Image 1 (cartoon, rainbow, N blue to C red):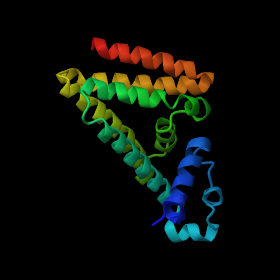
Image 2: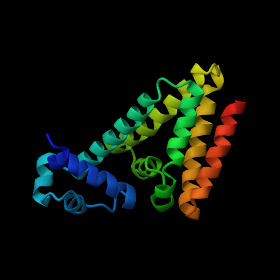
Image 3: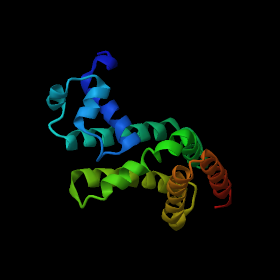
Image 4: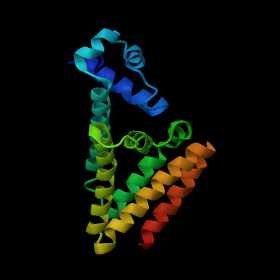
Length: 186
């Protein structure tokens, strides 16, 4: 099936773009339908609620992250972590405008107390943390691995916030260089 003609895929892609650029709470099903070029009434054929499309976007982002991790499997563990830093830094121009493509959504959705959406968003960022932790473990960092993973993830999320706040891509570039040097010392 032609991906462009698949209305469900178009709706998920449109929702993903709008959620990133303006936030989940502001985005309406009508906005999503318009961007996807799908009549609003058809949205309910593919998704029973806005919650359902939010969960589909979370799953799409999870698949994107997992595909990225899989593409680095043949690299040494430290290089995988460096690749993750570079992946984040490569998004710097978008980060200046919209924040971190993963952290911003997780932050917004995790403000909800419990529920499927909040849990799925939290799990998304937790998967990144666990992946980082596993890389440090495989590098022989043992009991330090959880702390090192948290430090790396915190550094990347924090610099994304600062890049957005200061509207300066150099912030993430500078911190990425620092984090890569830090990896050499841990």
